[in-house]
Every structure is written in C-alpha cells, then in structure tokens.
Image (cartoon, rainbow, N blue to C red; front, side, top):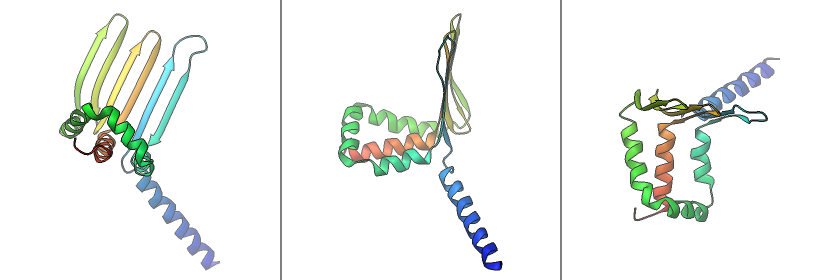
Length: 145
C-alpha cells in the first residue's frame, strides 16, 4: 500500500512539473465569432511552448523555405520583438468608427489584437516570448540576415 502511494505521488509530481513546463510561456489564444446564420465560432487555445517545440522539430528545409519568404521582414520582426518587451502593458492602436473597433495592446507581456465589427469578433493573444522564439528560429534558418 505504501509503494502504491509513493508511485501515485511520483506520477502526480511528474504531471504537475510537466504542466508547469508546458504552460511556462503562456497561452496563444485565437477566438473568432461570426455574427451571421451558419457563422463559425472558433476558439483555439494552445500552450505557447508548442510553437517553440514545433519550430525545433520542423524539417530544416521547410523552415528555410519559410525564412526565405519572410527574409525582408526578419530585421523588423527581431526589433519588434525586442521593443515589445519594454512595454508589458501599453495600448498601441485604438481605432473606432461606425462599423467597428480595432485595438492592439500589450497586456501582461502578451500582444493582443482585437477586431470587433458587425459581422465578426476576432481576438488574438500571443506572448511576446513566442514572437521572439519565432524570430530567432527563422533567423537561424536564414543566415545572413
């Protein structure tokens, strides 16, 4: 009975540590709600760590192809990711008109983009660290940038 309790404690502790590791970078959130008959309602949440791990597991040639396509924008992505870290809580864009509202902010070191209009609501949240990881991996795959 004591061995069973120790095994359960070990498994529980391992699962807890795995959960902490998986969620240590935060969560990427994408929510899309269309306001029409038959409209889509997509709510997608994924641990940001999966992006970093996925970029490390992606085939090198595929990563090089992606890096080649975005090569002109890599310096901008690198600088943007560095600068966003300096503004953990800031509002960059807040535009309202009669048909909608667009807001781009940093909240708790996460880039948040919200678009609200008559036909749909879109919310995207990405941790800044994930943007940095993507920039790093693409730069590694595209030497000379």
